Image (cartoon, rainbow, N blue to C red; front, side, top):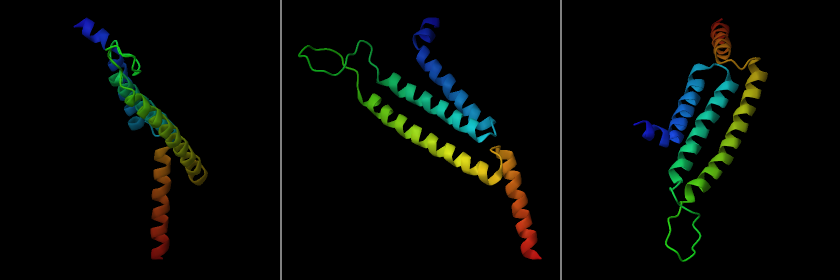
Length: 129
């Protein structure tokens, strides 16, 4: 039992990172912390795909004429593309946080919602008068 847990330590690390990232996204009101949580979650998914693509005793898929086990390079290539997309998404998210900060003066989700509700209430009261 313990050997099975230790031999699959990478999957336990992935689960811990995934739950940590999800917890940060759900529990924090700060928009930058939410983006960091999404990045942690995304990193755990990268590690999962890379772990699944590894074959024990496998080598790079270079044909040498000898029969041997190969590791599939496709998950690694897809993860490289996903890393680039993740960086672009993070940059866009941070740019949106900067614009939100300029508009509302805060990056706390609760403060933004209060500001929006008070603005909506004042628009309703102003339009009915």
